[in-house]
Image 1 (spheres, rainbow, N blue to C red):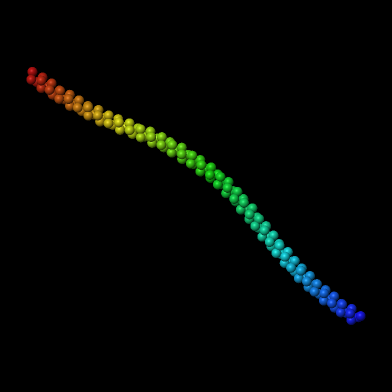
Image 2 (cartoon, one colour):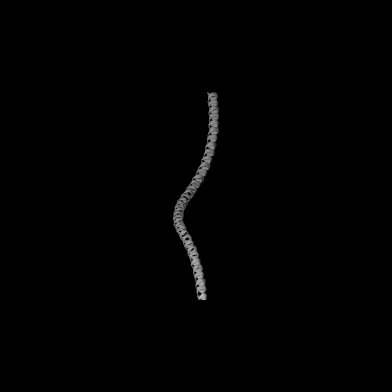
Length: 135
């Protein structure tokens, strides 16, 4: 009976050593898992922080894009208004240019007529002088 008890004690000691070994392995794995979880949580926290920063940047960029779009539309509108003004002024200038050409032509015609009338008057004066000189 003593032998059986001794064997049982040795068997229980072996089981206890095996269980203690497994417990140490499990505790080591748990500690490694906890360290891994802490590392993952830290990386997750950093990633979430980076996401928040990027979302804030996106929000700012969207606001800037909206402002630039509005400014661009205003500039396009001004450009369209300036184009209309330019076209109206160009049309007016073309009209004035046509009128100037017409007036220049009238001036040339009046000068030509004036020159003819002057020559006629000079010819008439010469004839009168000749007639006066003969009498």
